[in-house]
Length: 586
Image (tube, rainbow, N blue to C red; front, top):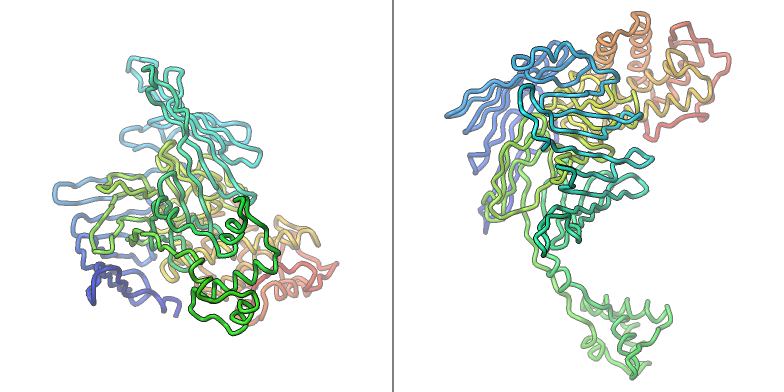
């Protein structure tokens, strides 16, 4: 069953047999998250779902949130109730999926259409874009009837030729309030940033600081694992196969410096001459000393090493005195307590106390924060890190603006990520976009995958979708027909075959139909929908009975069992090994 092997209990910290943190998780008979109950009752949550697999209520001891959806699966509102609170917040979007202001407060907003989905203004800001569709300016909007004081703040964004944000500044009265520069590695991962803030200098003038705040980042694949500042290093361990942070490890720089030591070979080389200039050992001697040091530290010196030392007129005891002691730096551990998506809600110390906590809205905006220990906690929605200087969330391939609930640049994979290339999932309480590349194209499919397989399932589905597009590109290079032709048909076949093997034929069929329903809403021709559904059926059958999806779909093309808008003739049969990009065993 796809919902087996899920976590049901978690414990952390404490002393003796008593854990400082204990969580018990329960699921419904259909595999959906039902409850999380803890020995910290203020963090308890119960979850309710409708028959469409949509999350409709999250209940806790302090508040309850009820969610509403459109017929197309978009989140349309949330009703929050608490002891002294009863508030309803609507979420409106235009047909293209662009967020709109509250229609009751701004009724004219529904009449505006944004070319290429480039929103020019909203209730708070006026926006400008460059020819590539990248946000370049954001200026405070002055409401009508308000006297202009010319104190508007303008945010400026600059990009490199890979469309990556490399420079940001915020200006008021013609003077910069903050500036920041961003660095990336060859894989496009952000590796560092420098931030200059406005401050008063020794003469009393306000200007940008001469020395920037510097932060360096380390990665494990596409997951941020290390944040290094001038005072501390923070390392993150994630839940396996997900973007949900699990353990936070903080080490002060002073502790790390204490842990630095010279190897035995380094020490002997540095101290091996009377003039203090040191000596250089041959590489073979360095290797022998390194091996000897390992044996000494393990208290298992081999007979070969003892014999070698004897030939040199030395003893193990003499060398032991030269080995510098190891120092284990003091580290502070916290457990991330996250919501069902992977958004951190609290940091739990080893003694079971809540060291940090925060509350967010559905789009990741922080509503309040309790941080008595001044902990640095940048993680937001899965795959996102908050930049305090700009208010943006770095999201691997792009930057996300939580106030708008969308990205500031178009999707780098183009229309593969959906028709609206700025869009974050329109059901953000169930669907995530940890890479900043593409959300699940139809929110109902994403919710269904999440319900039965959780975040790891969404990651797998994203990988399958990317593989399907690559397979389509490979086939297009051989036989053509990327749009409504042979390559397109093989792509659909491959996608459904892989989805069937991973999630089962029933879920694959729903995913395929939801995809076409999304296309219908964007005005795709009826003939195109019929073609796609036929190829989906072929792919699902391949998933049930074929060993490898790429080979199976190529064979279906060769024997004329795939469908194109104008028919498909396999005048140029493909050998299975010609273009297979299926890296799996399917």
